[in-house]
Image (cartoon, rainbow, N blue to C red; front, side):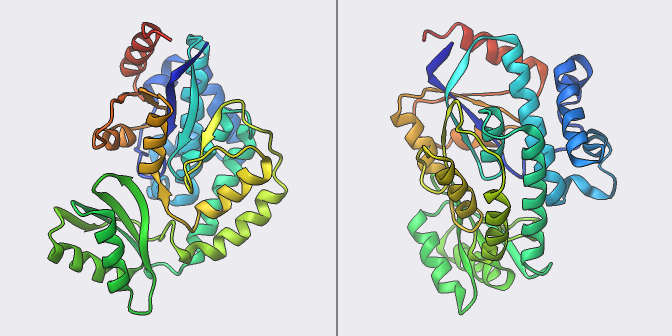
Length: 317
């Protein structure tokens, strides 16, 4: 039973944590089977990696991405096993688009975890370690952040990479240019201007070499049209062809994540309920910054998962 007022949103990197989904894993066989399927596809024990996180592997992007995707798919499958309620729309933040595609039966889980593992490897290899950076800027307008990036570039790359919420933008590019932009943002009166603990300058032109190699991999990747409409990051629109979906995934790697536009578009489509289908509550936190009539639910722990199900089952369609 689809609810036109409901959308599922899938988190990206930054939502991972050691031990995530442990309680679901203990009690739900469908979660255990999902991770076994991911393990078989990857050739290593993804679940043990998440729980033990030896050598901080969970925060290395080639492992982070399949870990988050498998977690989101496990929660989606668990949801489908317990209730007939289905969302009318999907959207995913960056990596979350791939989770959405697997949950919409556009990609198999095996192909999904393998392609995002490759995506992580390509991203890490695109820029020498230590030369790229990202930073969060809070309390300035989008226009101010764009102007600061232009001023700070000085022949290098620094751009607005993630429009996450009103007044919250993540910038990305060369580490030295990002540092200059952070200083300028502080001078401009930003409430927060902070370099993030990542070395991959995601969603910037520095990712174009990775995007080209990803496009070649996507070209041969089996894919079906999704059974649920997915709004894509680069333009907050639904793609209606396989070619369009693959192009959106390719462009996404080196262009801005337009999450503000995505959430605003969902609201314009009469969505009033959002469920964050994946670990953590990063996206739910961002939604609170929007001046929109939206109610957010989270799903990682069994109690909040059950609360979300109860609330949505009693919501009129």
